Image 1 (cartoon, rainbow, N blue to C red):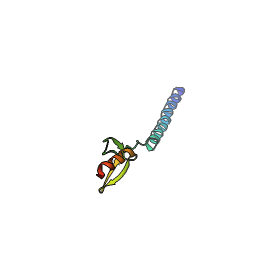
Image 2 (cartoon, rainbow, N blue to C red; image 1 turned 120 degrees about the vertical axis):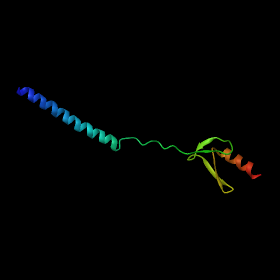
Image 3 (cartoon, helix red, strand yellow; image 1 turned 45 degrees about the vertical axis):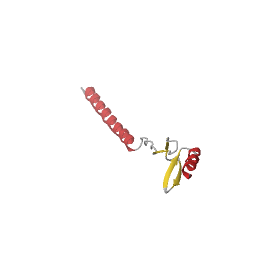
Image 4 (cartoon, rainbow, N blue to C red; image 1 turned 135 degrees about the vertical axis):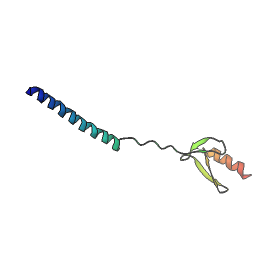
Amino acid sequence: MRSLFLLILVVIFYYFLKSIFTSNKNKNELSGNRKEPERIDDMVKDPFCETYVPKSTALSSLFGGDRFYFCSEDCLEKFKKKNSV
């Protein structure tokens, strides 16, 4: 009888400790171990070749008070030539 009572106490103590450590682990996962989502850059359309490029890597230039974005120096130069006439 005594050994059965001791066994029950050990099992209860085991599940108690397990629940404490599991809840701490979940709190740590929720508090900041998650990766931040990657930021998606805005896409802009090149007015000359009409391709879309990330705004952060696009070349920009002002024409007539408007800002235009270009995928390459080549497109920028072609746009300048076309619109200077």
